[in-house]
Image (tube, rainbow, N blue to C red; front, side, top):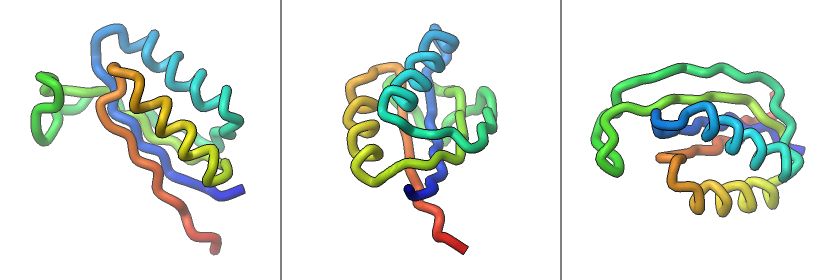
Length: 92
C-alpha cells in the first residue's frame, strides 16, 4: 500500500451529492482515507467548464497504484469533478 495526497475540485452545484459520490467511488475501490481536510470554496485560477469557483477537497489516502488508475477512470466519467490529482508520498 502506498500513501497519496489526493486533491479534488468539485462543482458547487449539488455539492453534497457530488461529495458523497466522490467518497463512494473511493470506498468502492478500497481506498482508505487516512486524513481529510476540506479546503472549501475557492476562486479558480482560470475558468474550467464555465465555472469560476470550485470546492477543494484534500485528503491523505492509502491504496495500491492499480486502484489509483481505476479511480481516475471513474473520476473522468463524472462531470461534477472538475479536476483531481494524486501525488505519491515518499516513505520516510
